[in-house]
Length: 570
Image (tube, rainbow, N blue to C red; front, side):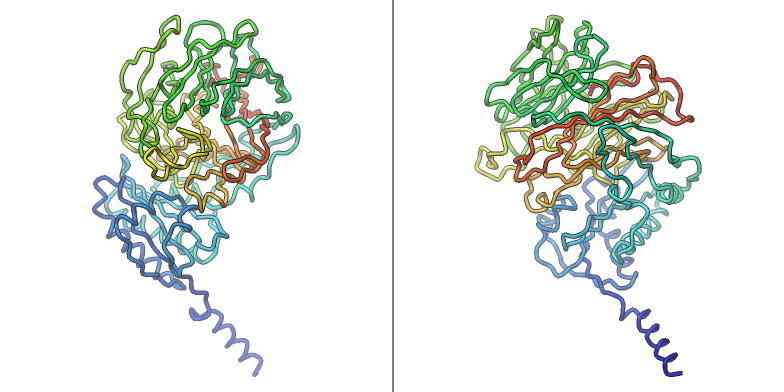
């Protein structure tokens, strides 16, 4: 009997709130800078979230008021950088949220950030399409946050490392993942939609991975296509000071064709391919920085010779494809001020003269505020013949805008982390006026495809995992592995359909090569991997490895695809 009483007493004590671990939590007020008409609700929603998180039990709130200037500074840091920049506080977690006014209502985001440096931030989002849905949306966020604070893992947080290993073989089956069905169902159910039929079934895509031999060069960016019109795949790679051109065989091994060295004060940050001169083969468009100013160049490869058609272009240039309309050459001017990211205001449409002797400025392109020449892509996400715009902002959030420039959706996860930046080399962290320089980084590409030929575009974006050093140095962009993610529009937001396995080091760039004439259903995704680690901006391994993913849709996605619909030039 005594033993039975002891067991009962122990069970009651273990189940009591007093026995539960108390978690100390600091909550930052919601960021309402992009909330539009909902900005007036910022304080109210913060109070609602605070009370509901506290009501979950085992949570002790850390009361730490912040001045407005301090809040603005902290909101500029992502989840990995925030802990090192917070004032000293006795807390285990900090909650950081944002409100976004989207066309159909309000989107709420919340990050649960551990302050011990051992765990990854958890990102959650909720949607309110009407006033009576706001409280349920906050309660949904509070439940997700409380679950994370208790140390439980939600289906939404399955780590890429848990789901797929790195593709390391020379040839083999690639690690491809699909979004967890519970996550899709929970999100669509919260929006009053049926999750059935939207889940990407396992095996919907098949892929074969081929890894080429390592190239002894440190690639900043890459473009893949047909530069001489011979129906073979060529690879254009740029380092800090050079353009290198290779042929690429079926085993992803490169053979050098030609190279071009830029002057010592030129630092290259982007390369793209497009066909604008009406001749067979694509031109090579290089964008670079010359100190604080842009330096553009256009090359052609004809008859086995790499020739510069234009040099010293005073624009950051990039050809961008408009689905159904063709390719446009866009440019953005420079600015000497570091606080402007060394970028001028507005993206301009440029037209090359027939002989490529000069570029004509045809005026500013209508884009959402803050979107730069390297940040976006046009797409027809829903197949209605009108073009939406996908952009990655300076917080690595993927955003979708409708044809009128209204925000439709914001990703809860971060995409597009990259190491390319605008302006002078990293050797100088000081701006012209002696102040600390904050770099304007170029996000990873947004590839637009119509992989299943249904007239609705999908996107492929990168997700590089931030390294620990980024936590302490605001100008650092070190990465500890990365993967590529395929997203489709489900009527209310972009949904992950599949993702590649994790690659070590970082993903420098990626592109879609032209399809083989005998299998137009197959996509060839080419990735430039930087397998080595970096430290303080210096690479410990200067090699670049080309990796190819041959992706074939499943039976339900086997509609033939026209070559013009797959070709991606941006």
